[in-house]
Image (cartoon, rainbow, N blue to C red; front, side):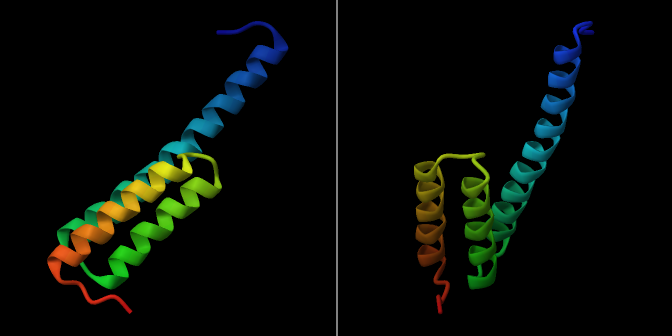
Length: 84
């Protein structure tokens, strides 16, 4: 355990950030799993939205999200999902 005041604060901040980041990543994984389990336009939109939110919050890089979204779109096309 840190003794220095600033180190204690850093530890609190790190724990809070980690909790938030893990939550966002779980949301992404859940949305992608839901899409894979039952491909639909709605679940595709939800998964892409979660990826965009993660980029906005700086959790994943823009190109990583673009790659994952492209992969989801390809899977949707292969599954014959009608997009609006």
